Length: 97
Image (cartoon, rainbow, N blue to C red):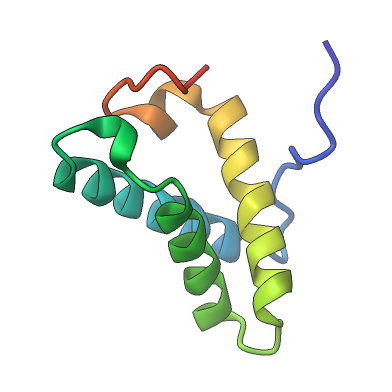
């Protein structure tokens, strides 16, 4: 099975940004899903934007769009490579692989 193009391992230059993105994504996803009585009503974009904001705060020279793209690649990589850690604490909603 080939690796999807969106899944790229962190580089030495952006490792701190990747970590910030992934941790912000997980925290926001857990908080968003814990607020909803029906898990299908949770907004998946909340976590995506939290990850992008975390990257943008650490690298203000990036545009928000660049920060969003880097955060998306970081969370895709973490979700694939570190599947058990990435999804731990987040309720199974049927959308996870």
